[in-house]
Image (tube, rainbow, N blue to C red; front, side):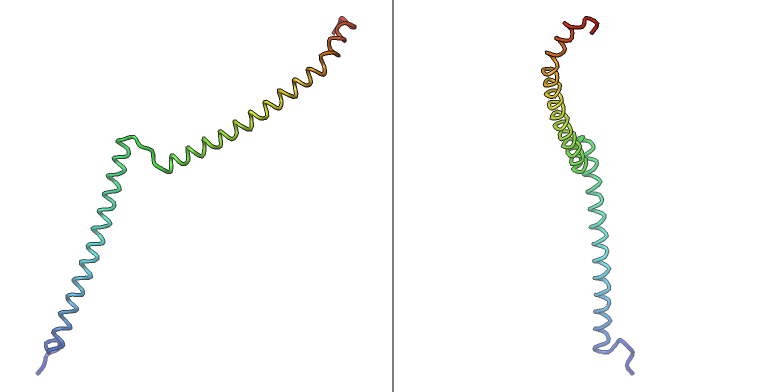
Length: 109
């Protein structure tokens, strides 16, 4: 009379199945511990960043982009102001003799 799982091959198979089950459980426990350790490390780094008053990379990149756009806008406006000043100066030069002559001819102006 042979019972199921108690023969020479049945006992080994059951034992190996038990070992495989324990190994799988150990690996999943290790993965859970790893994820928990990573979360704790991230939380510690975030707390340290806040204590040291450091800026996150994303925030720095966003601020740098805003500064770049503002600089480009300032350069564009400076070029427009220079062009307008030159235009006004040329208009003043062209109008100066006519205006001074008009004042001499008609005192009401």
